[in-house]
Length: 219
Image (tube, rainbow, N blue to C red; front, top):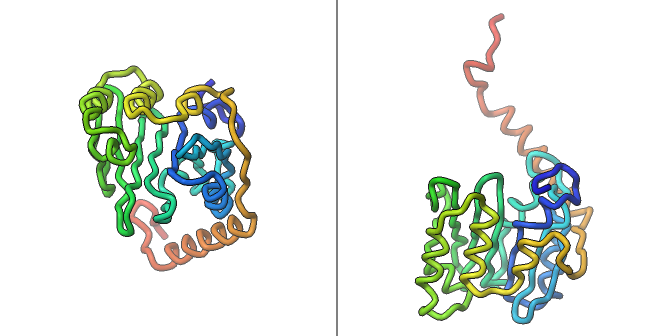
């Protein structure tokens, strides 16, 4: 069942696909320096990253694997890249264009609303998806149609957008039992260092941020 709580549940194995236009060994090194256990699958010119578990190796509140992979920066040598993710009832496509100062862009879909703007994030257009995927400009109308298509749920939507872009790895996006490449676990030292930094930042905010009125109790 998609979204089950088990670490190796189907929810971790479908609706979560990052495609990086780089060699699998380069991508595996990047995964190992991160916070999420993931499978790295070579797909020709692309390498696929799919989280092995729903939870990242870090402590809450930074323990959502798909959010961590989607938001993590990629070095110039690992771009372009494009990710397809299901997050709750929303579908998300994230594009990382090539170029030294390229900005990561987000396309978010919600049932009954279609594409919605993402506050505080750079929004992606269908043309941005086409440019990153390498699809010919003549394919843009098909991508626009997929982005604007109505679906009952986010997995069907990201699947349609992925298919319109003619990218590899469709089975990794929609099939829990699709063959996957090597499992790469993140460095325990890096995870511990991140958790320590997160705790220190939380403690600092607690010291400097005044409590809200509803948090104050009468003496």
